[in-house]
Length: 178
Image 1 (cartoon, helix red, strand yellow):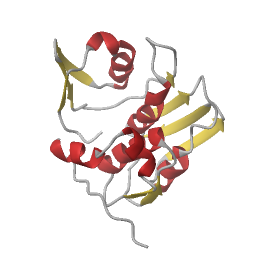
Image 2 (cartoon, rainbow, N blue to C red; image 1 turned 135 degrees about the horizontal axis):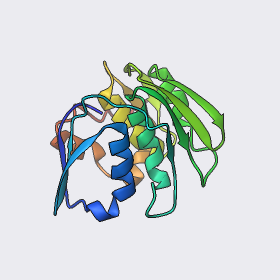
Image 3 (cartoon, one colour; image 1 turned 90 degrees about the vertical axis):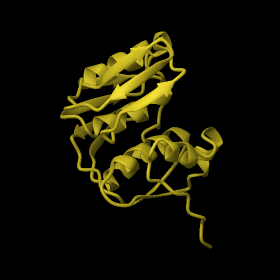
Image 4 (cartoon, rainbow, N blue to C red; image 1 turned 45 degrees about the vertical axis):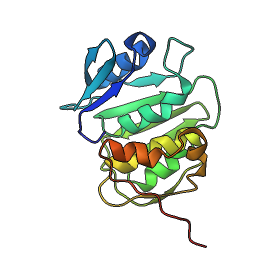
């Protein structure tokens, strides 16, 4: 998303086969070693057409919003199909504030029209999954993005800003002003 190389230690290819395969379909490349996966900057991202949640070993439902962020950078339309749960597209309205063209088709499907020139703005986190995807979108956006109601993300990713700072992200936590 940010055009940087990222190495994830302790990642096991055999646990991520469907996710890595779909990322390859987008045009993302990897260097895979026994104890780590290095994600290399993509030259050009192309929509694979569809990303659908499946039971393990398929693409996990919790990863769909992250693929939606990737789709904002890809050429073409990407159908995000949430096979299991309804109403998980609340992040789409926040993407639209960042200048993403997207369409929610029904409670299980949305289309991301890419690529989008992500722009910083003030957005709101509605849940853990949405919050994580909004943070990634904000890191890739031009300008400053403020994400409100981030407490949802804190439940699943304690001190996420500190971990992201360690890999070079320009992110700060602001105290809520009353």
